[in-house]
Image 1 (cartoon, one colour):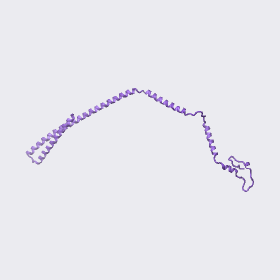
Image 2 (cartoon, one colour):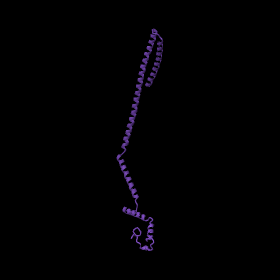
Image 3 (tube, rainbow, N blue to C red):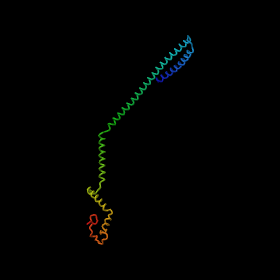
Image 4 (tube, rainbow, N blue to C red):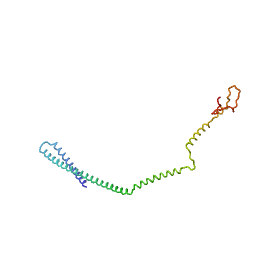
Length: 198
């Protein structure tokens, strides 16, 4: 309310200053058209009185503006302090609630719970491992598996088409034009199934 009153007073004084400005301009215009003398001096004295009154109003207006500014600052500071108090009260209430809730929390119980969960997970993994075991299956030695793998590789090599070896064994060994025939059963073969060289 005080700030509103100060603002209204300031507006009223500003209007008075505007009227005095109009009056000063009129006197100034009159003096420009007049010659020096008693008449001009009389108009000049009127203009000085108006100017002095204007200065007084301007000083009052400045004081009112400063007063209004100070009141606004005071109101702002007061509101800021109120807001701060509300914030502090809320923080204190929250802190009390946190302390109350914290008392109901047992860190040891939380740690025990975590340990129990870890044990349960370990037990579950062990159960899965047990359930995945095969029953009645003999233990297989890695060395036996490697030997079987090597033998399987050899069998795959001998299973390839080796008919050309049989054809080579049945081919005549006499020189061209020779009529001498040898008994195939008496022909000696080497380790690869080919006729042995003499």
